[in-house]
Image (cartoon, rainbow, N blue to C red; front, side):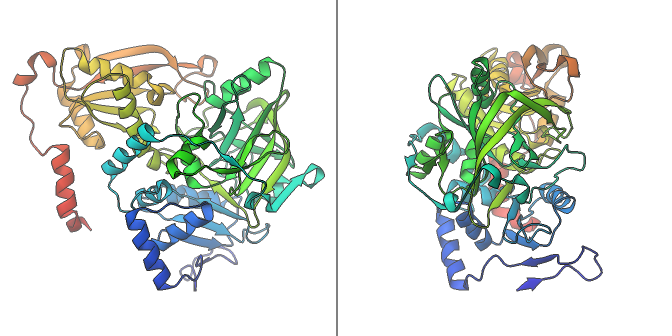
Length: 511
């Protein structure tokens, strides 16, 4: 069935919406029943079938890659409830070479990625994620001889990255960025630990890209070790993959923990991987697209500018090491996973707000801070710049302890800005309530601390170019003053838990 745009709209020739497949009503109902209980998936294509079953996937044909895909993606990412969109038959490229955007901006789609019940609530999802982080036992990948990723293996003169329909995501970008929703595999030359992280990848020419990694990131630490030895860094860039692999790649994991092994532990079965021909690195056998090669210390090229997650072209253009692509692996009809940064909150923030918030509370617990009742990394701050922690106050200095630890633990450390500590009667996810707590419980002369020379980086828009690398942190104690908390005026309104119960029972009125 074809669904045409409304009459009178000039979208260019050939733009249309189509169905993903012709699944029968019986098949859809069976899938929905499985998804309500929680169902795993095998790869990106299986994930798309599940998302289509819940009615949250659209397929668009005939949309140009230089202007319209980027504009549509920005619209989707900044619209509550927007579907995932798969672009196909992109003008100038082979039919079936596709781009997926806005994949995990909604909680139901994130639940599918994590194998959780599709209708799970926000706070239950966070509880389940926290348990995953506590209880998952990593499983090393299983090496296999082949897999769908080997359907096409190109080397030497056969490599041409221009065949992929890489969008120009923002009009002022320095070029097309194939790597936005990517996962970059690197190996520590000292320990052999294989890390997977998400870093931006700009296409330079047929067989070369940029690969920018901010200082302090695990992949950058690996890079620096190789470069200090005068050696290129072997790497594999996945630019289309299972969304669970992307979730693992895009979040902070503990040093030494392989995200590939963690995903295997979550699934209860190892990730099947082939061994890269040139680097020996593991490559997930069911990935869509993989670039294998070496990041060279002796070859540099201008990289950027690129619109980043802060909502600015904060790092400009500068010479960066070149990633020389030795082999390209891709499935037939490959799919690029596009997660371009936009002004926050965008897609990555919409799913990270749950997972990074759960990680922040977990890290406070593991650091020994007692009675942390909730944490929230607000999407408007890119899930980094504005974080809120709620506590049940137990002793003098408890709020300051929670604030300082939250600002410097793994989740809060990189490019943070403001950390707010509130009492447990404040809904940390409600920005209005948080600002109300700051305005009514914090007094500037006693409620504010500043940490100087904290971990920042080139993407920080508030730091002058010649000073990038460090920034400061604001800690706001917006709790009732401990010394006279029992005499503080009593607040009106329900507790956060009572608010949630009201919405569960009466939220239907709002629809």
